[in-house]
Structures are given as structure tokens and as C-alpha cells.
Image (cartoon, rainbow over the protein chains, first blue to last red):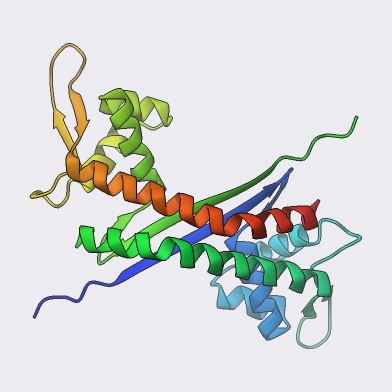
Length: 117
Length: 117
């Protein structure tokens, strides 16, 4: 039986604003934090070390007047994390951008995939 | 004087067709081969080793019935490389896909960049 070919178009968008970079890694982390309410759970879901997730979260909060994640340390569960209103605004816009980009690129991607079969 | 903030939205699109992957690296290589007519010159333009470029070119030619690059070895210049008609078709579609994706994602990217300033 011939193997079914899987066709996927994957788009990764990065925003470079001065020395700040916003890309799929940080945005995926933010969305997992939003789901789980915990930085360590979000890190696990991404198969990422806690230290790595922590570094990304610090990066998301670099503008101290507008943090994207509120973190509280300690407690039995090892602290909680919560996406701020500003963080959610950024995440929503990023996801809309991804969807719009994918929608526009999709037809070309499918034509390419057919040509490559 | 305040540093000007540079805003850029960079999109990288990969096509996964079964076990074949077509992404920005191979497509950039193909476009440099088209410009220079040489694999080693294309590699230099991408600050990539010749071996690495050669591996990518082999990957582009994996479907032997439809190669994307025609390579001839030897000669004083160390061989020439030429993008085939099929290679150019793929490259053109890929570039159109990038442009369409960027155009659709652009307005969101600019809003994000403004929020991050």
C-alpha cells in the first residue's frame, strides 16, 4: 500500500521591534501559560526546561511598565503564572496575524505541495 | 539622541510534503544559484559552507526525474550550476506565497510592533 503523503504548510512569523523579538516560541509559551496558569506546566507542554521558559517569560516582561505574564513564586505548587491583559492583547493579535498569513499563503502552499509529490 | 527603532516582520514558511521539506534556506539557495550560475558563489553569498550548499542542492534534486538544479563539475571555475525550468517554477510559487503571506500578516505585524515600542 502506498504511504499517504502528509502535506502541511507551516509558517513562523517573527516581529523585530528594535532589539525586541516576538516569535512563535514566546507566543506558544504565553498561550500555554494562559491554559495552565503555571510556568512549569507550560514548559512541560513545550518539552522545554523550566529555566528556558523562565528566560522567555522574563523577556516577555522586559518592559516592566507593561508585563505580559504575572508570576508569583513559592507555594506548594511552585508558584503560579497568569497572562496579563496586555499579554492577551499581544497574543490575540499574533494569532490573528498567523491566521491571516496562513490563509493567504495556503493556496500557494498547496500548489507547491502538489508539485512536490 | 534616541535610537530609532527598526520594525521588521519576518516570515518563514516551510512546506512539509511527506518526507520532503521545502523552506527558506533551500529557496534562498536556489535564487542565489539563479543569480550567480554557481553553487560555490551561491554558498558564499549565504555565508554557508560549500558542503552544506551541496547537501541542500542534492535535496532539491531528490526527485531525479525532476531536478531543480543542473550541476556540472570540473572546469577552471569549479563547475557550474543552473536552475531548471521545474526549479524556477517552484521558486516563483514560493516567492509568491511569501509575498501573499507577508501582505496579509503585515498590518497585524505593524500593530504588534507599535504596541511593543
